[in-house]
Image 1 (cartoon, rainbow, N blue to C red):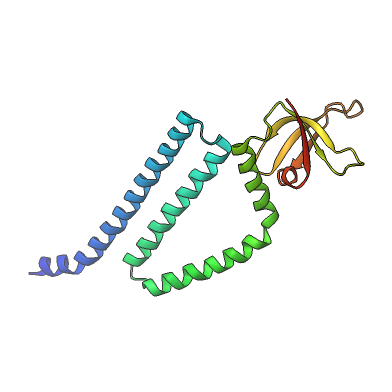
Image 2: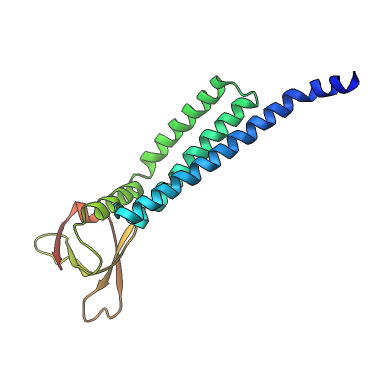
Length: 179
């Protein structure tokens, strides 16, 4: 009789712990499968460069694990109303932060446009024209990342110098390109 009472007292916490472990395991499996699928699609079809695939995989991982965390909290007794209120509050703060870091996000979005539209590539010589009467920044593209495009300066007096041009500048100014 005493063993049945002990088993009955531990039954609900053990079931809840099993559910939490199952949620975590399924979330981990889902994120592994989806990130591998994105990697394989990117490698097979060359849709997006590696510089875009990595943040995409990270975003997907955070979304899945965040959802799993919310489900675990719900299983542990946190009410859905509290979760929804917290989520909308964090979303409002994120929206304010989005506007605060607009220039950084602009450079990241312009990098995505450079990767997908291909207005220039690594190895091309480009010149960002400042105005009609002034010479602009000119160099050979040696690297493109999420924030800057790195140019090897072609001037005789700047031997070995590199220029880092914000990606958004390529969409705000006229650009001259040589292949």
